[in-house]
Length: 366
Ligand SMILES: Cc1cc2nc3c(=O)[nH]c(=O)nc-3n(C[C@H](O)[C@H](O)[C@H](O)COP(=O)(O)OP(=O)(O)OC[C@H]3O[C@@H](n4cnc5c(N)ncnc54)[C@H](O)[C@@H]3O)c2cc1C
Image (cartoon, rainbow, N blue to C red; front, top):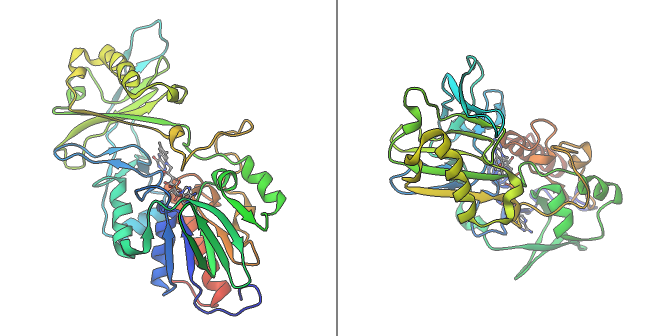
């Protein structure tokens, strides 16, 4: 039942074509439920964004690693025929304890629970899902501004168009959702209080990566694994491709530097790396970065201090809203592994089941 109507195959409008939105579309497609995705950006993937360059390693600007315990994500990858490979950590790391001491090469303990990367880049998962559900079902450059209940369903306004559907599912990080989209009638005040204090995982982070023709960091007495308290790069890792054909290193950059230019950040990256590897660091093929805080479809400034993962997985996110016509999904809404790719997939599975159970009473195919 939707409101007071019995609709067996409701039309579903999904807002956001990140992993959660695309996975939900994939599950709805399996269950013969019609859907359409509206995506604000000119690309799919949201916080998954691999920079590709011909003849160079794919560089992850967003989500990169998964673990063996990420069962639902691993299951989806397997089903789609996508392989994973272990992250190279090596047996030692370059460690810079404080800015007044020189960097040291330290031994790393054996890693019994390695992290994995997606072969072909994390965006390969996104592109595979988009191909499966049909690119014609994904409308790009559609920035949703209003969601309103109508007598027959829900109306969704974007900056350029208006859409109608029986059901709407929003995949935006909860704080972004209630900060940037107007609702009529207003969402429950208690939910708004929770979203206002919900952290968007990695929303303020900066990633930097450099492609090189040779992996000089693999030389004896060196390492591509960097841990630095002196910064501005606190962590960096070997980021060469799965087939070891193309070489790169990639890491995090202190998020406080979001307001300076790309050129200024690059200068700081090279100064830090030169300390470890010498002037060869300047012979890079290309430099890529993403300051996620400057991405309006991921990050909006909080009005209060919010802790990492605060309110992630809150039970209020799984309630059906607007008389059973409006649902929330997305990594931050997942009861487990909230904030991560695994959470994005799990929350999509939850909403697919909620829709199937509420509106057709059928067992959901996942
Ligand atoms: C730098 C970084 C590193 C990360 N590293 C990892 C990692 O190693 N492992 C891991 O598991 N996870 C990692 N994550 C988290 C991972 O990226 C997310 O958990 C996952 O991608 C979230 O998917 P989602 O679909 O829930 O949300 P999103 O990817 O945020 O998707 C939401 C979508 O909604 C769209 N949108 C926003 N506003 C509107 C609007 N008004 N109208 C229409 N569309 C809109 C956005 O453009 C976006 O496509 C990382 C994230 C970042 C940023």
